Image (cartoon, one colour):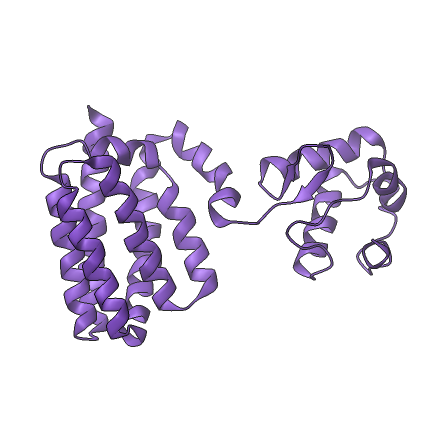
Length: 239
């Protein structure tokens, strides 16, 4: 706590500053490593004194941090820095998607940008053991072709494994967060006839490219896969 309170980022906030300034200060503390996932924030009284702000202003800032997924409340009271998982930090974007169906193409464009690059990186790093695990997941998916719930579980593991093999932690977190956006619509899409067999075929094409260590072919296979998912998602939304 002493390190937190003595940080260079701490100090009175100018009178004209508002809650956003408090949010910025706390975000800077996290980026600098002075606050880490799991750390408990000081009491309201301490924060009010440190930042020289009123209780209403501080509470507005804390609410904003909670909405953004930066902080979380635990049993027993108090605000803690969250695990900072991408899927939590992207909740505001997920809310935007829930009220704006036209954003679905934008979401899948982002996924193509992220995941095509991710699978290309994976092609350069994939091991024989990784290939065996991909094939095992595809076998599970084939067995689950009539069980959308089981399929979705193995599908997420497939995409998580791709992110792990790619070896870029930031890219992995972003891709994981984007994967979970618009999930409700994609759940409906997995109930549509022909969607799961197509996804299995797409996954096999990706793995075949990984076996060849062919980055371009892997990226092209992922692009096709995401285009197919986008089509089925839009179809699910239209029904």
